[in-house]
Length: 326
View (cartoon, rainbow, N blue to C red):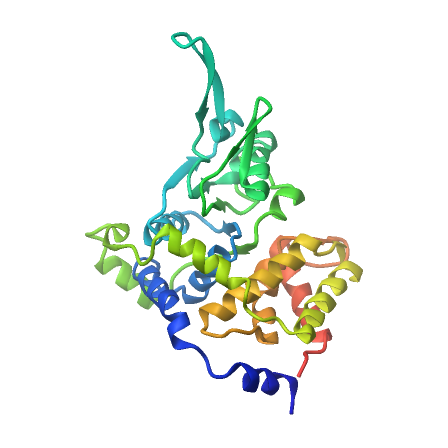
């Protein structure tokens, strides 16, 4: 019996009840972000994987609305930072000040102390300010004046960035990009979806949302994701793809071990959203570009194209070269 059929036989049919809360989340998100079902599902995958999400697109397509909606639907705290070129790291993480009355130094938390943080137009800030998020994203804490402060849980950074060719932007360094579990684009809606947006423009879409689950329930689901089974043949498939990126002549930098972990966790979350307790090769293929395209660096002299478009093309070629387990 082929490997994929063996998995299906062992694990049984899809668990509709397991996917029910995610269906409610997707339906609610679909009411405020029209015509972008795949992007919304990927955003949920990132959230359930305890990962951070980078949304790259032109202004006005719903990036900020998506970030705020995820927080509202999970009844979580939400803060927004509008990044600008004159921001300082203390504007993000907070600052220690002297209290004249108590004659002691007190820490005043910055906006990073929220369960969902929208880092709006993150690439308008200088690299020094961008780096203020590195510890928060990786360690779930910030350190100020030698003292560490834990961040609330769950914690997710949803950053938006304008395309690199826009004026007043600073490219995110590879170390920062690698901390985002995936990068997605929303793109312009089609005519049918935009017509629906126009008909509902009298009421702000975000006000129509009601919570679907609590923050504690979200944490429980995130813990359950790790129990989704990943067969050794599927792990070998992931590793083969990653190794190809490291050896490809058109890539100066391949996928890091952190990227491998992100692909693994993302595939588990996608399987759970779709009501399965096991990961299939199709889950991996579906996530390779959103999880890996921002982690590789293209040799521009060898590839025609720009940035993420060229990276996606190379990853598509790699997917065609790697044998899919049966």
